[in-house]
Amino acid sequence: MKKIKQLFCLEMILWLIAAIFLGCGTASGEKSKKIIRIAHSQSATHPDHLGLLKFEEYIEKHLGDTYEVEIFPNEILGTSQKAIELVQTGALDFAVASTANLETFNDIYQIFSIPYLFDSESAFYATMKDDELMQGIFQATKDSGFEVITWFTAGTRNFYATTPILKPEDLKGKKIRVQQNPTNVRMMELFGAAATPMSFGEVYTAIQQHVINGAENNELALTNNKHGEVAKHYTYNMHQIVPDMLIGNVKFLDSLSAEERKIFQEAAKICTETEVENWDLQIEEARKTAKEMGVTFYEADVDAFKQKVLPLHQEILNDNPKLTAIYERIQEKNNQLKEG
Ligand code: GCU
Figure (cartoon, rainbow, N blue to C red):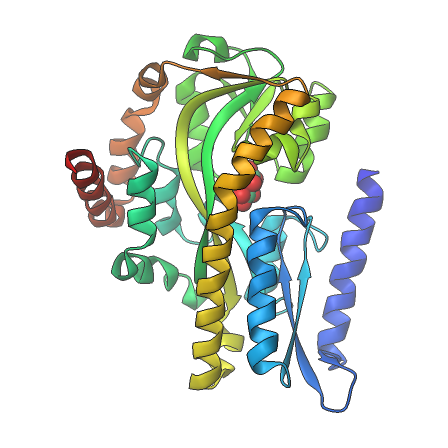
């Protein structure tokens, strides 16, 4: 099955490359249109996809003579990491990328991997809405051929496994999947588990075949990605509140006229608003569905988990000092929202 998926991905990638070289990036019709291709790793019911549908609708409503938008969900064009590379080269125009994957392209994204960086969801949202701060981060990868045009919420990441993880000691000797970046590997070591990096699409089978004991993610992983079928214990230890980013190819974005660029920005704004609106609703739904699947949700002593990984804050700031200003600005938001 995995082989078929890999062959299919390879075929799609070759097809995309051929399309670019043969100049087939246009739809047939009276007037030639550029096809804008967007890839992501979630299902077609996930909030990211619903946001992207609004993006598509807005672009086609205002620039429909020139552009046609096509969305490819479910890692159909390859893993999330691969999709970033395809946006870099221009084989794809846009992709949704996790900050964990972006970290391997630019270490500014390491900021979001810091566990317990945000004290609350409101501090997270205040940070994402801080345009001045975000512009610096969004533009940081321009030299690598892509930039961020907007963000999505990716919720709070928590542990889930085949046995209950109620305290940090329960992680001892457990193989837990992490996203493929060094900070998450280090975080898992500090938690006391054996970090097993792998791509998101491999997690279900890895749990099913007992290659790993569990993983960590938001609640939608249990339902949209069906991990709740194979891991029945989900614990709110709340180690990361993270965004996903919608990245775009720089050459393509720079080729837009000022008027077109404005429309793309408006579309991106609506895309984020739709995604965020749908997020909380879908999390509620996912909790109900997961319970019906037989998943048990546990509250945990969050502080016990936090103490294990707090040394990572200073470790990261020492290794990557350019994060200090961003880190301090986020701490201000944590404090303001605590006082408020
Ligand atoms: C979430 C997140 C993705 C990420 C995935 C993962 O689903 O939204 O961007 O890739 O977790 O754990 O790999």
